[in-house]
Image (cartoon, rainbow, N blue to C red; front, side):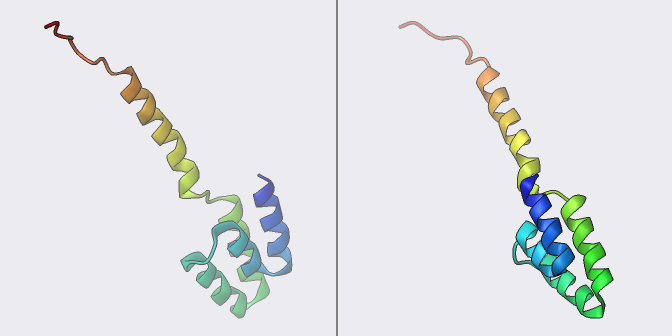
Length: 83
């Protein structure tokens, strides 16, 4: 949450800076740079949408990975044979 606030503040100053802060160097940053070259407001709108609406894929994967671990731990091991 704090990272999103810092990214939005940076975006109001220089839109690609906020996108870089939130998403790193990638395709999203390149798109934002191109939009900012067309004008300040297209870059600003894109930056705000990217920061506020779209979340990182890593944040979405964490609950799924934890759920898989919980399922694996809950699986019964099966009958044990005594020799």
